[in-house]
Length: 508
Image (cartoon, rainbow, N blue to C red; front, side, top):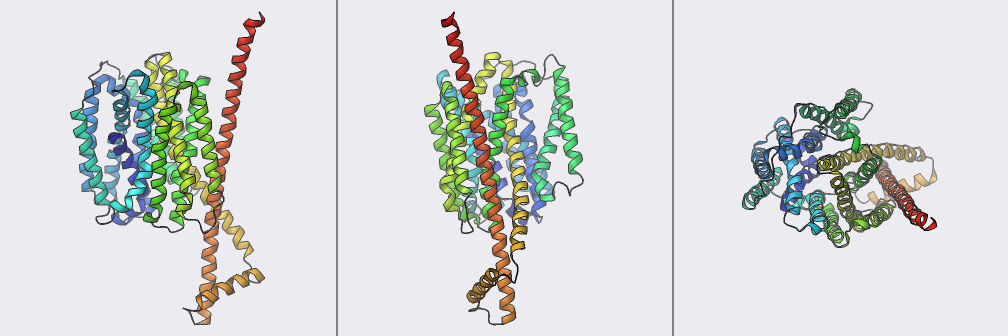
């Protein structure tokens, strides 16, 4: 659990403190956004190679080298002085943090009996991996009080050293070693890594530079898709592929992959939704912290609830409950007004966090059982699909939602501006009311009128922002309901098939 939390906190601290880093590195926020690209790009693609590296060099050596590299990069990060060095350090951090999710799974499953591996070990491992993002936003204001970003780096270094101690104190078994890495693996991996890196770069910065304004974005997206297609073509013609594309293209696996991807996109609301709303409205990090304490506690509660009820035959029911909670929580947030505050969204966002902690373990357990039923060699392909869909899906989802917010904010601003005609009696009355409030501090009539107009413009911008985020929450609720309808249809179809199969022998 400590290893899982260490790697997820690293990502959470970076995502939560981009504005702080911009000030400390003397860069703009659009420039510091590339730190997130540098960290996430290797994390999206490295799962492709990690399991083969583990099988070729042994489980214990894989664990020890991975955690030593993570600690070394945490120490190196203290030398960061400018944007260039920070980009290099975050790239190395993403590379070194990628194996830690695998280690967390291994340590969570290893000591448990077979019957508890998927029902207890898996939910708690995934819960602590998910916990890092909200917990980082909850504790960042406290950690940053005195020393700024250096305090964050020292905390990460301390946790990395504890992880290093724990891995060597409690070594994993050696495991069997087989020569599994081939030359074409490296070619396929390079193509997929470059493609994922391009997608991460575009969806992380697309809403900042704007999709149609940045000349480089179209070619990068096209080359990323082309590289991914080329890699899949190579894998299709191999006898021992890095990815078993034919199995992944079966209807059953396409359904599971689509469910994981759609759910990850929906859950990216907690990255691009509530945090973006309150940051745009000018709330300080310490004012937003209670919201993320609530999400953190709900995530742990969701993992515990999943462990209590998890059985493979209950997976559809768990998914139905999770989608209902997401739809309800998002619908509650879709009716916010300009007086919205972080504390008002604790209950609704906690529902979404609870649902995420219930959905992901049950989905992964179902996928693992399907993979193992085909044979151990299929496990690699499923784990790759799961990890990559979560990392890439979260990045793509956050980018799409932030783009949607920007479009809707502009639309609401234009609609509100069109209605603010100075000859309108309602507008005149509103300006008079603002002027009356300001008259106690501003006596000059010209200045008083100018400040009243400026205040009305600020109120309009605030209303446009809140309305845009309301649209986002409504969209997420609609997506969750659509996914729920598809799931219920799938359950009904399976039930009818099972009933017909029982009746055919009886009629015969």
